[in-house]
Image 1 (spheres, rainbow over the protein chains, first blue to last red):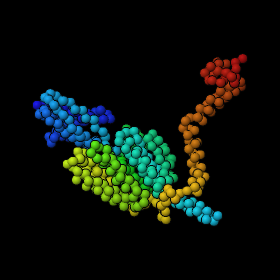
Image 2 (cartoon, chains in turn blue, orange; image 1 turned 135 degrees about the horizontal axis):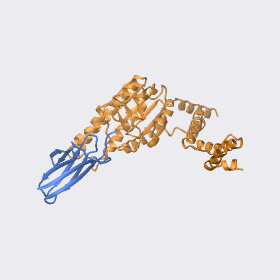
Image 3 (cartoon, each protein chain N blue to C red; image 1 turned 135 degrees about the vertical axis):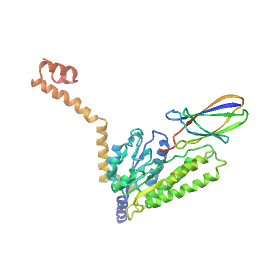
Length: 82
Length: 314
């Protein structure tokens, strides 16, 4: 298994964003107070990550997890509201 | 000759009937860069329907500039950050471009805050209570849309917002809000149809829905920007005569004088000149008349440039 740490921050203030909805191929979690959501995934295939938070621009990317290990995925969310 | 006179009269009449708008668009804090671009297009729309517009952007979008120009305009348009009791302006931390305390000076005006968050919660009702003709804004957050890999949602946002502004300038305020909701619904249907193949369609659907469902008109829904009998003219119809009459009418000349006068003061040029010339002369005069002691005179010669030339020590 591989470990994927997704750290979500505000692109402007760089502050960690808690309670953000993070989805990796249908599996969903919320970020903790440190802005991190951790997924344990089988190595090998590619995964689509969706990060959603009201007031922030949606973030969607596809990443590769080629082998077991720990992966860090930083996500900077841009403000979308006035 | 009489044809020319008639033409001139016609243009003059149209210009006099044209209403005016003041348009404010901050652009520093994201995502106001997008609403700034939107404001560029709104400005073009205004000009196309023969509404003269005064535009203030970025650091110029201040309380002072807005309020100086407000009395001459019947339409106030704001695109930028806001909260329930204020339009922020460029500084989102102080957020005090227009607050509820300023509401009374909008008496008789139409105010449009789009996009701007929550302004129809407290600020809008207060303005209408104190005499504003109508206030158009949202009771919730308003979202921007972005250009994503699979689809340019930002273009859709520009399109549905400009549909709204086009209606604001040519229809009643109630109709403008209806047109806004109708235009957004069309795009929501598109996003719904692409939920499976556009990765960001879900968020954009929700964002558009939030923009649509929380936007309201307060005050007179029948209010219009244009005066009765107003004729919409296109840019092509406007010609040399209009240009001349705009350049040389008293209102334009008065404003140009005001701009020039204010800019002098704003850069401190007048104050600096007065200080640089008058201070040494007055001090030198005081020394010669013996109003200052010898010690005071020496100090003045040492610290004030020019005093030594005007009143050299003996």
